[in-house]
Length: 460
Image (tube, rainbow, N blue to C red; front, side, top):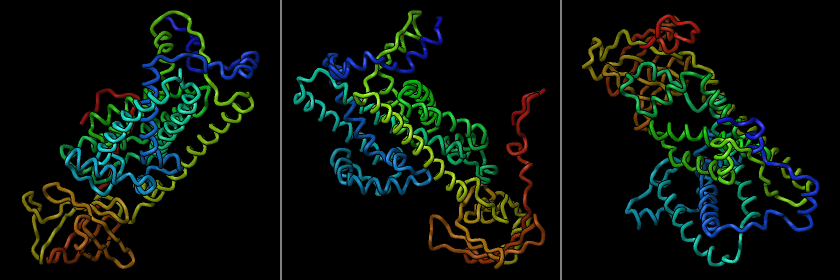
């Protein structure tokens, strides 16, 4: 198949009408309002318009992106969104009376029951609205003007999502590799944990993924490159949806709908895209309906779209950067940062040898941040604790995440930079621990790096 570069550019970039065409539109109205859509096309548009509108209006991720927030504030946005729309009673009623289920109070926009019930509600709502709309508006032959504004709204919603997820990777913030993952047995990883650790282990790969998503969003906000942007987003979102499905990431519903939105934008060009890729015929540019009748107004509208898009991107980057500096890889590492091996462990003055059958003995202590301490026991199980480390007061206070009433305070001494002793009462027993800090370069995942020349494949 031979495809000319000019042909591909003509299909991906909408044509700009010449002066004679503009004058004709001013005399007769928008020339694109005259086509007669088939009944199937009109019904499909009504259903797609209703369902897409309901989804975009009631999805916290979209709400968050359009208000300029980053992924680190998703839960707060979800709570604000729920209060704004007050749709929780509707979903609760449907869950109880249709599915005989009780939905939880906490909602994070994932694949929980609350979200699935919501999709059923919007699907049934669109199915109910479509026939009523079709009867009331049966004499209309097309929806060119409404479709033009609808696609603008979809473009901005989709661009906001590409900026949101792209910025969280380009910072990088979305994927992390905590120290505890270096010592956790691979078989204990969930499928999602494997994907997160794999991507988090390569910042360069994560940043490139984010830049690609941001590029798709940037192309969407400019009317002339919107088709190219939708095509790039469709490719990227197909990969994201496949990863979510195959690694059981709880964003399946949302990623699928983002892919649908990109396909909605590509639908008017589907026949021409098929022709340019599957045939050797010349494909001409198709005129696109404009928002307004004057060239000046359309130029202002295009500039406004770019300005809004750049503001969305700037807000995402600013918020994610602040979150990364405070909670992500950019935060200041604590003085005790590292993986500490327990060399000596005593309970009430009796030393416990390092037996894998000992459920009380600690094997390692992982300090990844100033407020999180992870304890690995001899069976390789991991217990995360909320921590308060006071270097001046020589103490560590631990709280269990699952039991807020549990508390333990240990005094610490640091005879050398890589040596540590801990003493205190835990679960009614007096503990004494002597630990040394592991060199992280002993882990091939940290040490290995990149090599242009490899005589043999290095796989462990």
